[in-house]
Length: 291
Ligand SMILES: NC(=O)c1ccc[n+]([C@@H]2O[C@H](COP(=O)([O-])OP(=O)(O)OC[C@H]3O[C@@H](n4cnc5c(N)ncnc54)[C@H](OP(=O)(O)O)[C@@H]3O)[C@@H](O)[C@H]2O)c1
Image (cartoon, protein in one colour):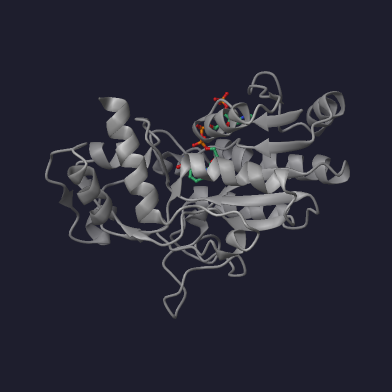
């Protein structure tokens, strides 16, 4: 038995599908079934189900986007920091392995020498950054809390995309936005992400932090071009002239844009496809599903 928390959300569904495809038995209690902010409630559920491992895909990313988390600080803090904190205390004490979905949005840019951030680099888009979003701060805080756990694997997800039209899918977003910001980013193919995370728990790789992104980086304009080339979008994409113009919209917070190294995960034998290859595969799939 595996316990999947947040299993009804966007990322949680990808975990549920992967567990199902492996024929693994899992329970996915809803928000209403389990108060994940209560140590007693979590301990009771873990005591009853005795899961082999727990996956935490609970979190709050804002509605319609991350900007709203600035006005919903307690909600964001509860889902992104308090819940992982509770899980960390209960599951570490009970020696239950668990994985936590974190985010690459705790970094901005790349290292001074231009190389990708590794898991050894301290987040630079959290408390030390004056313009870091509240969302990024809450995700960084959870990592700080969980870093001490001997049973926790932290998976950093970054801009999920896949072949299914969904308001959270990066590709859907790009097709809907009026204007795009030209940036270079590491991104994660969502099904590959979920498969890699589950594999990490199945194989019992050493607990710790792992960047779970497709190797390499990709510019927004490359993704936009690929969407047109695959015939999924025929509009001419418009770009903001600069990040300042993007941020000029009232209420908009700075986005983290960064390049992460996935070498640490690859060294365990768990790999994701190179980012351009993964995007091409995904767009072909999208087209096939559409026709
Ligand atoms: N989507 C992205 O672009 C992205 C990128 C990087 C990292 N992540 C991380 O991935 C995780 C999942 O995000 P998502 O996009 O899948 O979000 P989502 O679609 O909103 O799903 C979040 C899930 O968490 C549950 N939840 C929220 N607050 C809760 C609470 N206080 N107690 C119990 N359950 C709660 C929700 O349950 P209800 O539906 O019942 O409220 C839902 O099942 C988050 O940690 C997020 O930071 C997401």
